[in-house]
Image (tube, rainbow, N blue to C red):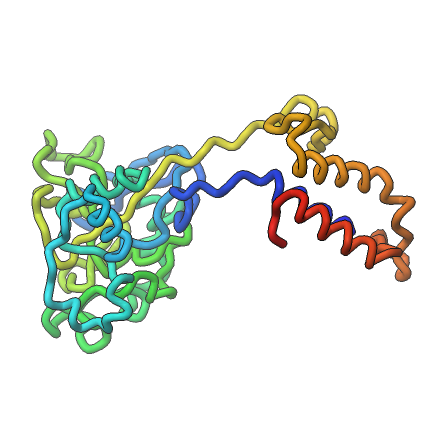
Length: 333
């Protein structure tokens, strides 16, 4: 009975999941080391970066998702490429969208209520906080990511197809934060202008006409898909293996109230702030739940096995009450 009652209350009170948060991973706030001594000069020096919590798309933005923006008149059409014909028609919508310039990527993310991730956010999501070289934390392997084949030449020629795959196919390469395809498949535009890291030796100034791409691609055979690797391109560049994903600020976690702290973390029973008396079915369902909770000891007996779990003595009545309450609250069980 209590399980049914709890379900009703949760369904009635729970806020709807924001559409922008669907398909995204949560990356907690904290510090990580950005950069590397193992790669190119522009990855040096490694330095500590502290980030607020944020959300990042679990997958690269797909052809189908980007097509919604085009259909709405907000985005330009991406440049078509012949390699799409190598992928079965039923899977083409789940390919990462390519043939988009930096502005196209930025426009889509804003249209979707998001934004492009910063370089730091992208690298944090790709490598976690333990300084790993590749998102999966182990040595470089062709089976972990779609990379290393350009025109049947490269480390993974004959093992990887030489063109982008539908997103999320290489599950062995998932990052520690749960993001897919952070190594290989397609390069990904990020928000930043390309510039040297703080304290970089022999590098001065910024290049505002160049933007950063991250992650390597299917066709990278001379650049390995290390999480710290960074490449700069003109923001107008459009290519068959450059795509993107979006990010969004995470909502701050509410602090415990004074009452919760004084009561050992338990919240005292109160009328929910977003409810008002006289709202009909929802109000009835809520107070019915409270009433049943207070009468629980009289309606339920001790478990037969001596445990603390109680077993309802009138399951038929419980089911009827649950059904009535669900319908009254306008919920579908």
